[in-house]
Length: 255
Image (cartoon, rainbow, N blue to C red):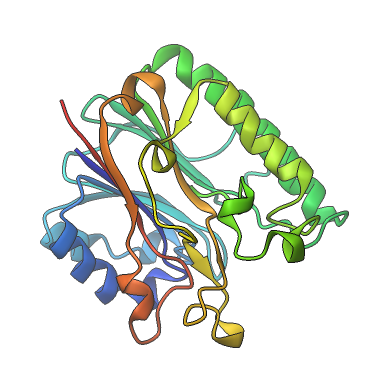
């Protein structure tokens, strides 16, 4: 089974890139974030023609998540209990016996801001939700754009980013609580190149200079993590014309 996550920063703009990438990588499940499209406009037919099913929850201009799968998803949840339901940021569904939780964590804007406090509240609600999910789904994967770089090696310049949003102590502590709940960062189960990042600012030639952060993650329950055979960041789509500022993260699981 191949699971992947990709913040596409508008499915309207990036749909041809996504379909091309799927044809190459053949994921069984692809979790998309920042689709930025209402449900009635989601390109269901394009994915159906590619051999996939889609579940989604979105809104105009902002946010939005979609889970694309070869096998139809069941037991779908389209909102995070205890969080603002107007922001479409979470989608949980079961695909072939695996509970897939697709999350687009708030950015937080700046440490100490109202949006930062909202981010911490949202993460607390996510932690509580996952605790319940893990009780009933021993094979679970939490995929998405977390907007958190958990370790110094996940940031191109830790000193520069220290105390800033995406790398503040409270955000990183929230990430560690997810790990302590029993989830495993499968990317770190394997040897990876130094300065492996999944997001680069469009400005200041961020990608060309590799001034990035690893903020897109695949965390798995221990029962699923032991089946993981590989996990990598695919930087090729970031080289395209008009790319998303994020790259896909892809993981391979055996029987």
